[in-house]
Image (cartoon, rainbow, N blue to C red; front, side):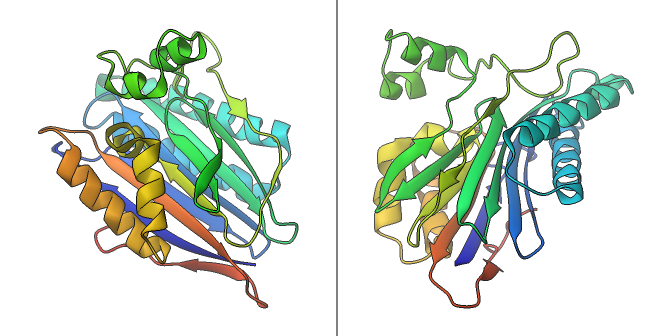
Length: 261
């Protein structure tokens, strides 16, 4: 199986970008992540970069899809962000969401872990068959039957997180998925809330159906965000992975022009 990757990251309507993405692979295992920092310039972007460095280095040291191992990676990243907060100043309140997907290219399987509202989606035949569940106030309201997903996207308190990395008082909420099988034709998307919030799942599916490859898909996502977002809108990042049948296998990365790792 071959995985084709395309990426997009933009500051949107902000003066700087606190989103980061990254990947690591050794030919069998692939780890990819998106992290969305918070805490102001010099804070959120630093937190997100700490998370990326910590998680990918930890995965490289012991790659695999074991649930406890994936949880440990995010717990260690939380400790690393907290250690960075000790420098004070603009870093004292820095936080970051994270979503990590780990793929076994030999066994065609994926597992993911996340904290916050950066999301992972698995699409099969153009429809979402699995998705992370946000650690947020509005998601809690959705789960409790108070509002639906569409209302949650528009809710005035939609940005209130219940968990993110950078928590000293308590361990942040971390959710790890079960190991899920992958098939040729599947599509994975990791994204910050700057993608899914203005677009919604219906738009993700429509643009996916209209795209022939991941590069065109992220270009369409970029265009849709620009068309729909309000002035001053959030940073947005997308990390798209398409699974193809290929006798040699491997990972092919096609970064979109302007994408910032």
